[in-house]
Length: 305
Image (cartoon, rainbow, N blue to C red; front, side, top):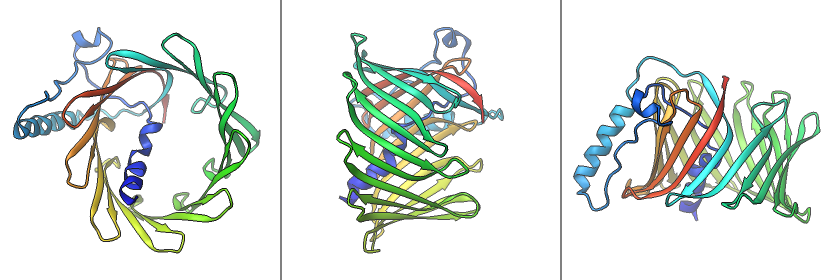
């Protein structure tokens, strides 16, 4: 159970992965819409050769040109592919809040609507995020309450029958940083909670406790000199490594993500390539042996941070 929880927490950021980009591309490949893809490790290659190639690639990717990218990528459209075939297309619509979509429409390969996500304001500091099926029936929805700074204080999850399923609560310190997170079931019984530790303004450790206050696992975060989170490691209460998530940045932008198991063996990884003007992002997921699993192409808008 601890191992599954560790993977879920480490991989959570992938669900809502923001578009990020690099800053330099070759002219001839930029004309094709995307930068030249790196050669992926071939199935059956010797492990030592594969490791050296990946290490060399990481060094090249992490090279800093001194140009800092300062924009935020906001997705307008996403095309998901598996085995080279389109499986779904998502279209984003925004209102006054340019950072949060009002609607996300998801279509299948026949351009038929299969899912709809709707964000709507209920009160000044309360919003509702609903997931609907193709027939406009609510599958589940969240009621989210934010504080004056716009950060989530409480998030309630309901099913399509309006039954409360789970409650999440967030506490913040005087600097506005998350200090504690708690999750309850639909009967408001505490299931677990996390406590956050900071050093030099950065969240360096997260301790996860059971409802009775016993440490179940913890997470250690490492940052580069620019404040980018480059490594998240999950450990059980006995200090045994459960999982590790590494990120490689170039000029402040994520370029590659790697997910490793308890033996530090590569389980899967994600590569990012970008169009010349940073308006398109190609996110490709591979298995540990280099087999392509999924490809996500995003068309984006750029906003200042």
